[in-house]
Image 1: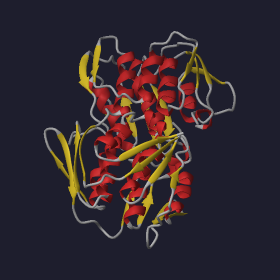
Image 2: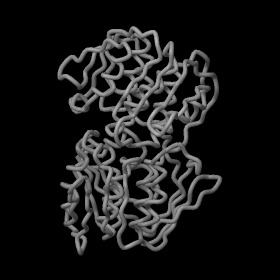
Image 3: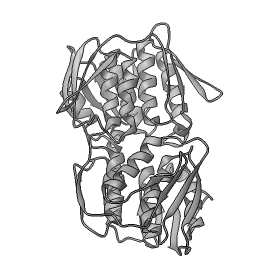
Length: 411
């Protein structure tokens, strides 16, 4: 299937959605499970391709591990294979080989890792050749403004070091909730990280303990349904499996979408979304939740709400350059995403442009497909390469059909 033609529901949108489990939680829990000496049982693991890839590669005896396009899997496996001295080559898609890993590799080398780049310096593929730990507590400095995945990868293996780790984060710290998610899951299985100050995390030598854990539903996946509600004239959506005390930074969508007219009510089943009044404009710093930025930009463009966005820098090294992709696709409905001094101004068209045939290019990026899908509440869409959603939310189009959205496959 190369294209998917989608049309809005014939009546108001109403749905109860069993969201997929969190990919972020699942991948972290799988690494902790693999590092543990005692048995850890995980429930409700994500069905996302990234998580399936992680599970498969953690069990693989092959000398080469192909992560495909899974950035989290690439970074976590580099750290895991290093500390386990597995002697693996880790590779991925051509785009994956354009996504940097130098910050993580430099940190691992500093504490004794032997890692070789096989093509371009600073980028995959890499050959993990071994590790000889220094006989003292490792004090490592790492930039905090590039990717929290580097930080999480190092933190999760730190309890296995003979003399522990003191990790000092330099500069602005982005995606802090993802770091806290990692630390919370580590603590859930018996490791007690200590924030010595706002920038330094100390982890003593310890072992992960046995236990059971159920992965929460995915707040990133929930964000697209918030967008549907924001752009609908009326409706009601129930999203199952979400927790008010979530580890996930993308729970920020609750606060953000209040500005765009979506009310959230927490209950035993999950959350219930309904309509309320929207603001005429607002601003938000996405440093802690960059995966929400595409969804919010599209929602603002379609709803005619100007928005000032900051904290988008990491979007340039995702599955695609998401800033460039957004700028290109938003022009098709008359909106602009202007950049100046690390600030992005989302400027909607005075009147939403409604092309007779609006085709959205997804750039091999699952979030581009799902972020633009709610536009169907305003006009008919054709989504190019819709199967990219398999990376994080394989049932997305099926769930839309159950909510009344009409879909037609096209070759």
